[in-house]
Image (cartoon, rainbow, N blue to C red; front, side):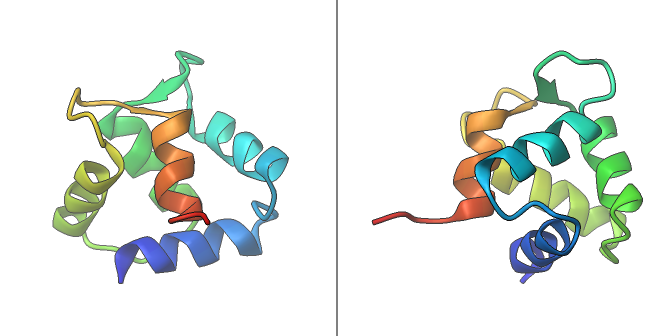
Length: 86
């Protein structure tokens, strides 16, 4: 699954805890807006060397964009990366 591959890549780059995930998100957020647009998300996927075709990246973006506003904020990012919590 694409989300799982992305999670594993983030973990391998130090994104294990909340601080590490925040750091990974900030690295992807090129314009420091506090959210990721499609361009930043695609660039982040490529920068983290996650081998996912462009069409799948767009589907992955939609999976992260929980409220459907065309951007991924940190809360949405965490919900998808961390997954369901007890």
